[in-house]
Amino acid sequence: MAIKKGNEDFVKTVNELLQEMKDSGEYEQLYEQWMGIKPE
Image (cartoon, rainbow, N blue to C red; front, side, top):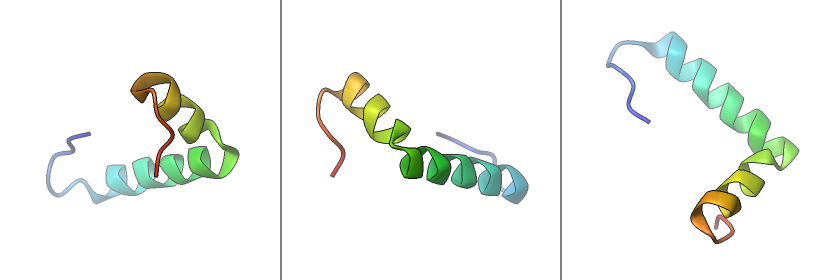
């Protein structure tokens, strides 16, 4: 994902949401669905 330089608030929000997805297992599920393999 590309984020315009200097947009630290948006970067923080995206990172927090990604961490929530990883903690819940949703990230792994979506990754495997779209990439065909489990994330490392």
